[in-house]
Length: 257
Image (cartoon, rainbow, N blue to C red):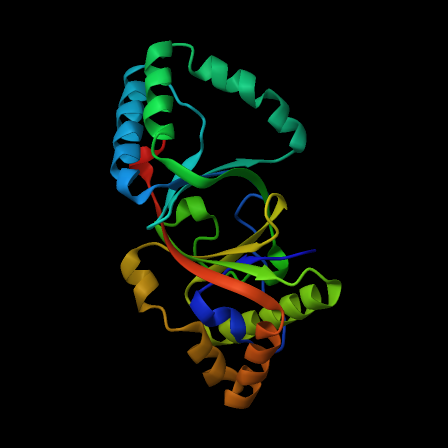
């Protein structure tokens, strides 16, 4: 499996050896829509969405977009789970039925206002949960929709099988060290089945305070395994991760309907 990951800052470079408990709560599949915003129009996009949500509330309707997540400084993801690919066949008809009571001109106005704020890239993808590189401590949220905030790391991993295995082996070792230390935040990873080849990792928290209070993963791993083993894992990951970027992601219930 080719990879590109969103993990916690440079934590994608550290680990030890053992096996981590997989994520089990998050759905296996999500459709994900990405709206990148022109910085000068971000406020206009949010205003258009709020007005549209108010229209939906008034009509007791939903647009079935899924849960909105703000990628701070970038734009938004909307994530909607599904179980079987056959479930996607009826989505257009379901949305049409769901919006039957909403005036068509209100929908057209929302589309025009929100689209005017967009910038590239603008994409829709299907993400599959990647349990092989997950870490799920007891009691922690393991579904992005159950977490108020997340630190998301997007990594592009070299596409050959050896690199993929090195990445997975390293993160399983890291997860074992985190489990031994009782690290509080879950690491839930996704890989696009359809879309850009990358690994997208959510470090999930119930609040910004909980997210900020969690120790750095690299420090925990070094404490558990020793500096030499931690550095070896860091180097192993650095050799296969072509690029990485980190984002603060906030669940936006006010924009979800």
